[in-house]
Amino acid sequence: MRSFLLAAVLALTPMGLVACAAPSPTQQVGCGTAGVPCLKGTAVVELKTTKGTVELSLDGNAAPLTAGNFVDLVRRGTYNGTVFHRVVKEPIPFVVQGGDPQSANPATPLSALGTGSFNDPSTGQARYVPLEILLNGESAPRYGEITAGPGQQQRIKLPHDRGALAMARSNDPNSASAQFYIALRALPELDGRYAVFGRVTKGMEVVDRISQGDKLISATVLQGGTLVKDAN
Image (cartoon, rainbow, N blue to C red; front, side, top):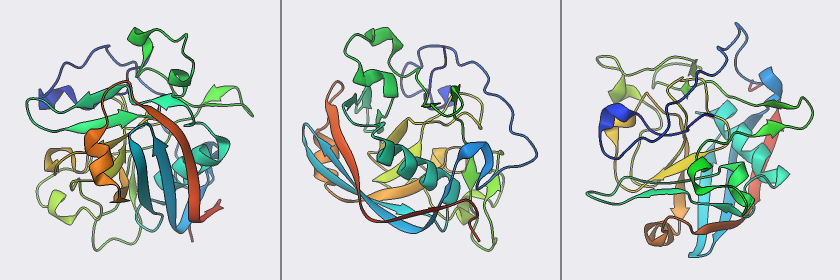
């Protein structure tokens, strides 16, 4: 099984299961590949949780593939009834993580939460999206590579500020699928390593109240959300 967690190198929390490698991306990456559409422009998504309502703004200009994948999963109802299976607030605030599709099934063992991916019913296969990072001064995102070298992190278009919305993954940079997290504080150590694709614009106080085991009742696209096969 695959464990979608944040990098063990951070040494902030126990990391749990060892991750398996995701299939390496083909030469074709980006919009329209692996059946993943891109978000054109922006979108506003509402999360109704057991602790209240959270509003997210998604940036399809800086992270078209990652944001498009999220919008597609929202419209499919993938997140409805899922559980926030990993919430780290001690010793310092870190992340609220959820979106494991299998967590919507109450029969799923607690030990399995955090290992699930979205399985595309059209192919019967798990869907993965490559790491997508846009640097200021570049016209298109970089795909499939950690971008955290000297001088690069300062150029990240979508940094891990408090309230940043990003994709969780296993050790393989190209293994993001459905699970996401919200940063409870600025996490510059994750910049260039995990794909931020939006941020909380309303309800951050709700995110602060979420505890492990709380539910994401429903996710809905409120505005925007135009999906295309080509970002241009």
